[in-house]
Length: 158
Image (tube, rainbow, N blue to C red; front, side, top):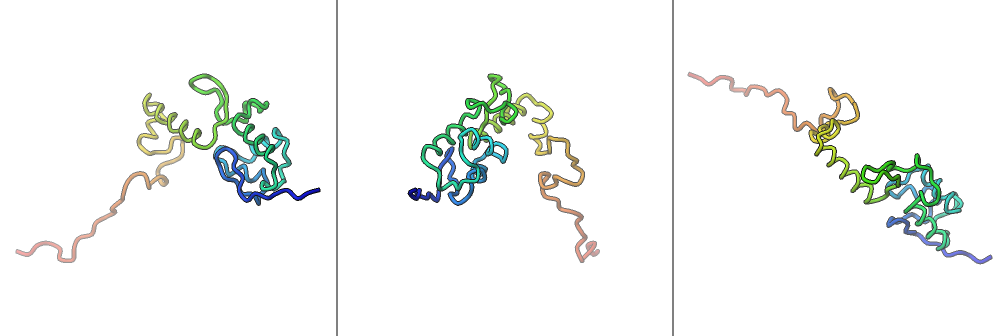
């Protein structure tokens, strides 16, 4: 059996992955891929989760890339995807990397435009998920000057 060539950096979904880590952990470096989704990707691609990323064959890398780009094509359940019932076309898909950021920004802009409760909270820089605001989220409210003391001279003389 011949020795496979080791790659220190493997590129999947426009992200550089560390070749020394097992593939299931290395996939988590991709924005939008977590622990469960990385396991799902490995099982759909037929790759051993504990195999080092650097020793993957080129076919395995291509298969992983395919599965990451469109997991629903390989039979991923809708509840595993991060964009279920999209607003525009009512489809379910999984967004990764810059697509995830772009879609999130557009969703926030849409909420602000229609002036929903969450949109208004985003406008004012306040938490939108029901957290208390009495003691937290002070950093968003601006600089606090505190109480100003009188100068040492006191009142002006006559």
